[in-house]
Image (tube, rainbow over all chains, first blue to last red; front, side, top):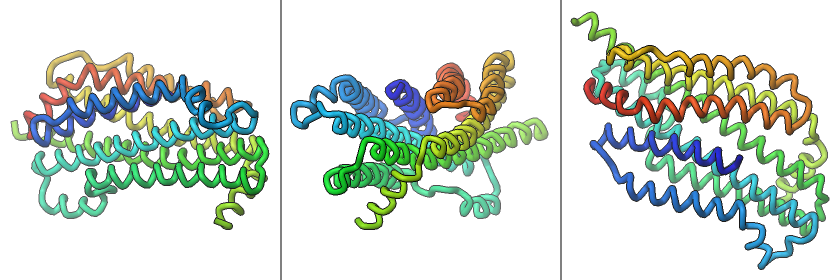
Length: 203
Length: 118
């Protein structure tokens, strides 16, 4: 299931990126991006099915607590990845709207008024910032779990609850990003619909 | 670090399965409503393009979307985390399938429509 969601979100991102670059530049470096996506997905598949055996060579993943900690860390990693993918999709949707809006002859006054209401202003920097923040959050969270296991001797139930709580934190981001995409979707639809209607009136 | 430890200890003591279930249901419903709005708007954009190209209006995808909308409140009645995950997978799986299918099938028409306007 983890790989299915990653695949689905990745596919949406690839098409969306293609669309945005096409509108902005008449095309883009999609080939390199596609190779990157396929390679990443292949590595994620290896991690999902072979990670336990691989990391078992370096760490003791035989005992109950260690294996549970590892599996939760892996699941939380995928949760972080989905937040990252959804966040990048959101940034591209914002970019798409920002590309369409001035091109579709929206008046200058509306532009100025709407500028402040756009949630993210620069998606290129936004992507780096988003990825950095979320990866840091994941590493910080997992590091603290491991450090507490060492110091305080967390039991399996506590590891389970703290790891579940991380999914809830990711959930806040999922809901937030989805609503921003939905909101931008409505704005884009109204923009396109408005252009269509003005054409009918003019015609 | 002390603060993080205190938070983690509090989470370990208080974030029970019951709390997890309640928060998951709330989150699942909010997430699903956002997805419904987003997929609905996307289908409306696709319909806008289809009208201009004199293609038939979308029907089955709207029907599937309403099916996922009807299932969303059922999340409240789920009893176990496994049931929540299964139901969420059906709801979000349907919505994502519609989205991906529409992106693949309608992308050319949509791009033609938009580039003509730009």
